[in-house]
Structures are given as C-alpha cells and as structure tokens.
Length: 394
Image (cartoon, rainbow, N blue to C red; front, top):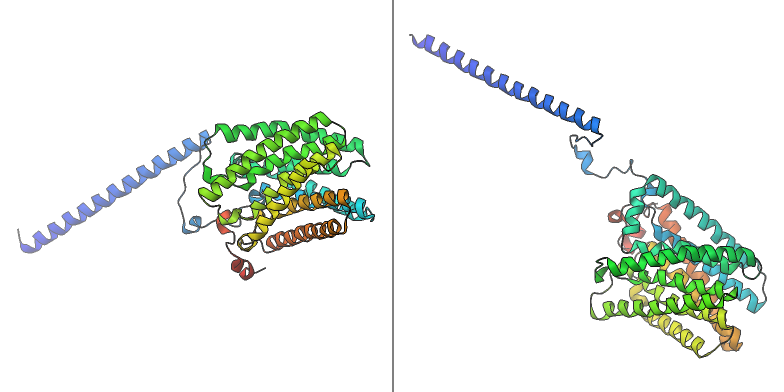
C-alpha cells in the first residue's frame, strides 16, 4: 500500500471514529432528553414541582414577583395599642382638667379605624400567604405580638366605660374569650418547647400585659372577683418574666441592639397593674404606692440608658415606646387624681404630652419607612443604621 493510500485510509478511519463518537453523543443526548421529558411528564401528572434551568437572574431576589403583604409584620398591630392607649390618656386628662371630650374621642376613632385596617390587611395575609402567617405564629418572638389584637379590643372596652357600658361589656367578654386560650397556648409554648435563652427578650412580656389589662374593664364593670383573678395571675407571671429577663441581660448574653427599644415594655406591667388595682379598689393604698414606685423607678433606669437605646435605627421595634408611655402617663394621672397638688399636676401635664409626642414621633417614623419602601421587605434588605435611613432615597 502506498503512502498516499495509507494517509487516506487513516483519514477515513478518523472520520468514521468522529462520526461514531458524535452519533453516540447525540444518542446519549436524545436518551437523556427523552428520560427528562418522561420524568417531567410523570412529575406534572403527580403535581410535583418540576426542576428548571437556573439562570443568573434566578440567583437574585425577584422583587417584581414578591408582594409587600407577604412581609407585613404582626408587630404592626402594636400601633393600635399606642393610639388606643393615648385615647385613654386624654380621656383621664379630660376628666381631671375639665376639657372637651373631643380630643380623646378623635384619638379613639383613629385607633378604631387603624385597628380595622390592620386587621383586614392581616386577614388578607392569612388568605394569600398562609405559610408566612403560620411561620409568624410559630416564631418564638413574633408569637408574643398576637395578644396585641386582644389588647386593642380591651382598650376599646375601657374607652367605652361608663358612657356605653353595654358595648364595653361585650368587648370585654370578647377580650376574655380570646385571652384565655391565647394565654394557655403561649404558656405551653414557653414551658414545653425547647426555646433557647438567647431568644428571650422584652416582647415576651406582652402576653402578661394583656392578662393585667383584662382586670381593668372587669374592675370598672364590677366583676371584682374576675378582676382580682386576672390581676393576680398577671402580676405573678410579670415577676417571673422580669426576673428571667434581667438575669439574661445582667449575667448572661446581652440583648441584641434591635431589641433595646423593647425594654420600654417593662414599664407596662406595673403601670397597668396600678390602673387595674385602682379600678378595683378606687383608693390610693400602699399597694398603689408600691406599683407606682416600681413604674417610675423602671422609667428612670430606662431614661439613664436612653443614649444606648436611641442609637437603634428606625424599625417596627419603635412601636414598643408607645403603649408603655401611655400607661406611664395614666399612672401619673391616677397619682394626681388622689393627691391633687401642684407638683402632681405638673407631672400629669408633662407625661400626658410626653405620651402624645412619643406616639406622634413613632407614627411619623413608620410612615416615612412606608413612603421610602424600606419596611415591608425581607429582613436582610432592611436598613441597619440611621446613616442608611438618611441616605435611602424616597
């Protein structure tokens, strides 16, 4: 065989091998495609999710496909607590200083309107994003905010006494009916499930506040024994929770920065306890003095920590300032109702308007977050400092 024929033979052999190789590759691709196609059809028939190719765009969050409602947080209901509590402040203020009821009624109607809007939004979230709601309900921290719906109803009940006692009584029993199972469920979660101490924070006191608050309308509507039951139950758990909280803060792990504003929630239990006790006893006794003293002392300690607390960037945690400041203001108004002195009057003025300023300030902050679209978003995309807040474009 000549050299030329050998080269031609070698070339033909190489071409044949390449052709055979390409045929094998095409056959494998076809088999793979047919296999994937049949697998895809099988999954589609069974209703299982079908895998798709991941593009670069899929690695980034799809901001157009997600809905703000999915990230609407249950702590937002605390806004109603702040506005409703402020209505009670100015109701007491109107009684003591003989001013028009228009102010407190206006605030009360705003609170009721806000409650209706937030409740409807959350119902829509339950319908459209059920898994997100279940996740919040099972979350060891966000679970603590669900009693805020109940607290709002109880605040409305107190506001309608004595002008509309029938309405107030209906709202009170709705509050009681919601409070008992919710309390038992929360206590069971705390005691039976493996919660770590590092997730324990001041928001755990909110369910205790709702227990104490039940005693206020009960006392004013002359359900004295029931009022004492809820008051004693609430005070018992308040002592346990506060001790546990400060054991963590002082001797174990410090609170994360985002929970520092929530320390103001610790003002609420002794203040609400005082208001409930006054609703039952109608007199300023040694127990009143004790609860009032604890409330004022707690506020003084938090005032000393204000430089650290107010470094926290704007977020929904700011709502923790509102209701406790309302409760503190009512405590000073109760104090003035008994002593009726120049000093008590000055303090009553100061704390009533301080509560008003706090609620207005927090609402303005929240509305600015909504306008800037930096609130109803995933946690990792939220601002982390005041600097980011001011740099964020509207």
